[in-house]
Image (cartoon, rainbow, N blue to C red; front, side):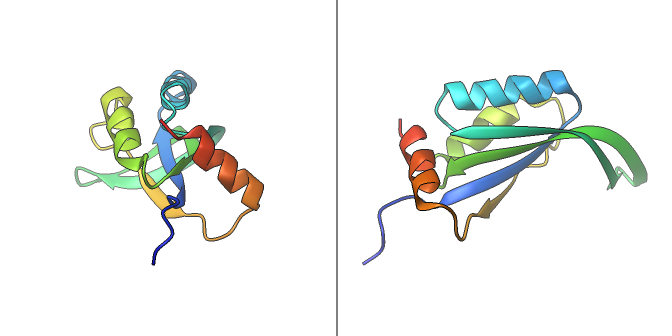
Length: 110
């Protein structure tokens, strides 16, 4: 029998500036789609877009959520994010302080 507790996820999302990072962070936390968002400035991203190599300064969001809340989180980011194709990548937290993981689950419960 599987555990009914949702998996804890860390969702990575890059943003073009502090304003966007703050707006997305506040939106997802206020809607209980995330328990916590870390905003990390000074990220330099190099990537290929529309056939050309681009390099931009960005902010990285590390969003703590659950697998149950991920679909709504992704929708909220996409509706707020200015990029045509925002980076939204979720990875499972394989291990963590049990009390912290429980806090994430409790905080993200609608």
